[in-house]
Image 1 (cartoon, rainbow over the protein chains, first blue to last red):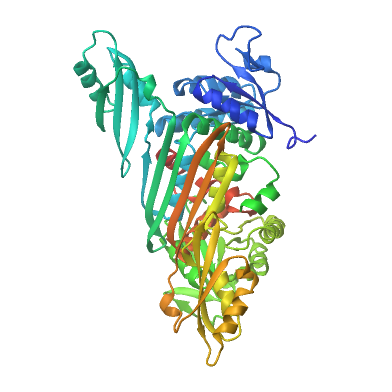
Image 2 (image 1 turned 90 degrees about the horizontal axis):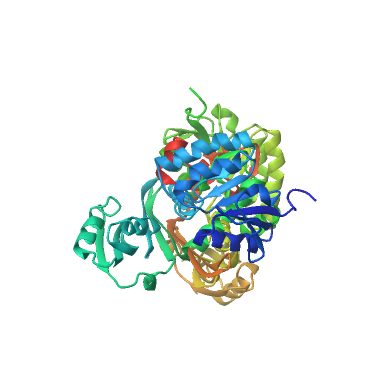
Length: 303
Length: 303
């Protein structure tokens, strides 16, 4: 059986919201099988829904790729462990700019040495939104792209609000107000005896919130507000050649961890089957490489 | 000066609406210069706006890529002339399916022999819409994508209507009616003494129109209706992993030849600077390769 026909064996590392979604995407893919789940401190012989749960990927036999679904800050240390063993990695590292570039650079050499590939920041933003930003810039080189997020929960902002003294639980919603500007709606449940005015002040002065219109609300129960639905509206008005008034929109309303897990699984396919050793961001991957199936048939039916 | 820094020398072949737009896109690109224009039967020493117009690309000195802006039916014969000389080609061949695949296959071998690359069907549909279709399928593997065109002029349908006996001029507008269905609004000016009822019947029975709701109108002057604005709304509802109700939209309103010329120019950049010898459709190209500039800076700012 050729490599193109063998099922890819995928490990999912971490079992939070994104990890659980990644498991479902791997199990739904016609060309993949779930080799197992890797969790820190997994007890010997553990399993979940018939799937082995181990603390070391070496216990899973041959693994082609690992979907790294732990926290963003863990990725720079975790990814090399797999790449050094020749296992491709996919992460959804979610900090744009310099940190993203540095991660790509550091994993590039390690992946090449391990003769495998790493896809970094393979979520929806950074990730597929990044690809759309690149595409719109190619289609209309002059102009402005606005990326408007939400309404939806921001994980990073929720964690920042939760870290304040006196906060029992917190949730930060991102509300688009247009032109890439956002309002932050922060809902906090307080610990016994905490002063809401002080909590509110500490949130408003945090760097995560200081540049946005932020409204802090005291609620009895944050869990009652939780919904992992999210979305984006990307808009570009621009110029193709000398022709102005070209207008583009990309919009989606999605379950956030489900989409992230799906994109990670698709990128694992490209990493194992198509990409030369090294590290890649999503706009560096030929989109067709994300799909299973016969390439000639895909080109005939989709292009 | 390295190859990355040298300006790409681009020839534009054909000077219809798309050819003129391609000229503007090349002249607007920071990393390209227009080597000249190739037209059949160009008189010796001809020029247009200070740009050499020649009948043979050999008269233009070094040329890195040729943007083939002649009719779709001419592409299979014209592209090899350039590829055999080692000049990359980009076309916007606009027939989907088997013919597109056959073109890609036939140019693939010729490009490899010429050690250059060919990008086929580099317009917006096929082209960038194809890339979006592929991306949405990767993001939500189960579900339905609808591609709704227009309102806008269809070149192919206009030519088909114009070919009927008794028709002096014709214009066919594509009107989206949802779920990938379209209405055709055909405006015809008649030759002296022609019978509108007969013209209408011959249009309605043409294979181009037979499967759509087609309305034929008699007008005194077709030119007064001409506008090259066009658009698309692509929609997908689908499933990521096991999670239903994922919703995506890609929408644009654009000047049609201007966008086509721009996409062709961007694909020429990928062809010359990045792609290995062979033939490619747009979803087979890493989107980042479409952009000029420093890749590290692009990744830091766009991903």
